[in-house]
Amino acid sequence: MTALRPTVFLATRNRASTLEAVLNEYCHLQAPVGGWDVVIVDNGSTDRTKDVIHAFCDRLPITYCFEPTPGKNAALNAGLPFVTGDLIVFTDDDIFPRPDWLVELCAAAASHESYSIFGGIILPRWETPPSDLICEAIPLSMCFAIHAPGMHEGPSDSNRAFGGNVAIRAEVFHAGYRFDPSVGPRPTTYAMGGETNLIRRLAGDGLGVWCCERAIVEHLVPRAHLETSWILKRAERWGRARARFDAADAPGPVATWLGIPRWIFRAAMGHIGTAAHAALSGDSVTLFRARWDLRELRGWALEARESRYADHSPASVVTRQPRSLV
Image (cartoon, rainbow, N blue to C red; front, top):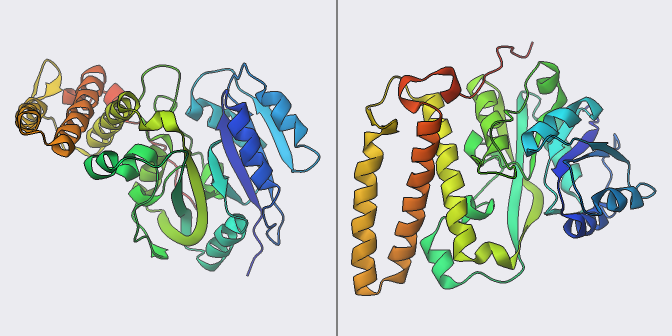
């Protein structure tokens, strides 16, 4: 069995305190047999991020690079040339790994050579426990980028490999694949799902996804992310992502009005009716879920109109790399 050398790879922007806590936990990671390193792309931070990273250089095998172009995917593309490992382990600056994280990912990749993508499990690290209303009304997995219970070791669907804990063989990027810089976190409004976008492309080109049940991390969910305003913004970003996925998967043109698929108007009317009935009856769970659904539809509609959803113009379809692995 070949010993793989992983490179932990993340982009960060103005999260110095959280990043410092994450890097502290990296100091307790078990080293795989082939060794490991970490590449951190500073995406134009104006806080003390650079100082925090350099403070760990004597304890961790860190490569630091700076990319001023705003946008997580632009930062990841800029950082790829600095990656030297056989396995690129994508994560985030608010993800806290368990000590055996890298060992488990490497073991899965070494044992399943026909697979190229290895998705680990993301559990929540709540700063404050969510209310019963939030737990019952919204899709926690999508809202907070965590996995629902029931994920098991074995072949997996591409939609279950989340960007906060996924390893991809470096040869995939040697073959020319890159992230789409028009999606993913950025200072302005955006469609979420940058890594998901890439993983869907890879799976569509025939690359297999394996679930690593024992490669576990925790995603920090701050108190501010439990506020209604943040949750509804998240719903809108998810709606934008779904519009992108739908445009890429649709077999042909879709009937539209003002550049928006007509079915969205029908669906919105249904959710408005549900919200009104729930408000009158005092059903807070159904009302909150209807508000989530409406904001998701709003994001879908905005993204569809902006990307010319109807005629499948080049702007509406996520760029695909034509190269395949040999």
